[in-house]
Amino acid sequence: MKKVIVTGGAGFIGSAVVRYLVGTVGIEVVTLDALTYAGNLASLAPVMDAGNHRFVKADIRDGAALRALFEAEKPDGIMHLAAESHVDRSIDGPAAFIDTNIVGTYTLLEAARAYWTDLPPADKDAFRFHHVSTDEVYGSLGPEGLFTEEMPYQPNSPYSASKAASDHLVRAWHHTYGLPVVTTNCTNNYGPHHFPEKLIPLMILNGLEGKSLPVYGTGDNIRDWLFVEDHARALWTVMTGGRLGETYNIAGEAERTNLQVVEAICDHLDQLVPGDRPRRELITFVTDRPGHDARYAMDITKIRAELNWQPEESFDSGLEKTVRWYLDNRSWWQAIRNGSYQGERLGLAGTGT
Image (cartoon, rainbow, N blue to C red; front, side, top):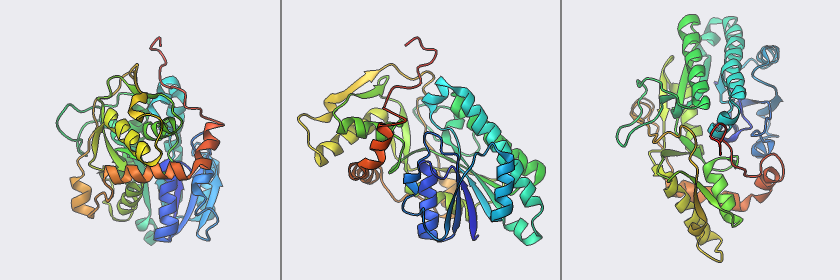
């Protein structure tokens, strides 16, 4: 595989994938992104001017633009990461999630199918459409057990429902039209270049600035955390080696309660940038998110056994790298804090709060 299009490539996970493919794998990459609020060209700065990289500003809902791009670039595959992804925003404004995650995925599938149908037989056999999704489509776990690829979907938020719908579209385009697809569902990502509305970067920046560290509910909700660069490697592993029509779960095998995550961030900040008092004293408990799933955790037996992938970073090593990155890259996040996002609470629509 010599050239791929990465949709949503200026976002958090997408940019990690682009940097990995351009800088480490060394293939040609066309980054496609509409540059909505979470898209950031600064995240592509290390590879933006590389000879094997090209950026195209376009929207996955624009079928004509997609068809023109496929015709011009003639990619060997698509890695589809473009999505509205923040649960709290989906509670406040679900329409954008339906429009982008469902309609956008449909539009991309149709453009990819038209392009793929006309390829010569050998190129047709080699083509791949990799759809990147989330563990949230499976719903919520109790204290025990892990999500497997065979579990039924039970999405509980507008965001996860929109991603579940997009997963089903991708499956249908494979079984109905023969489009060669693979799908991955991942746990919570963290790492450099993460938009600061998400838990870990928000807590790092608030803690650095001496602001309150708001934890939803009692902080007992559990997530399995995956370092974004481990995820990028996993996505390429599935893209190049995954069985057609199959789904692969990707996780960091690092379950933590939200409170444990915030406490660990406090401890790293206290060590690296000592303040007047322990940052754990900044933790406050706030009204919980509506429909907040209790626990997510993934079984990665399938990707480990079939494709020999497993995470390289522990949660502690990945978190230290993440905190250090935010300390060393103030210009990246200060531009966001001064512009599109000021750290305000989202996701309280309909709660009366």
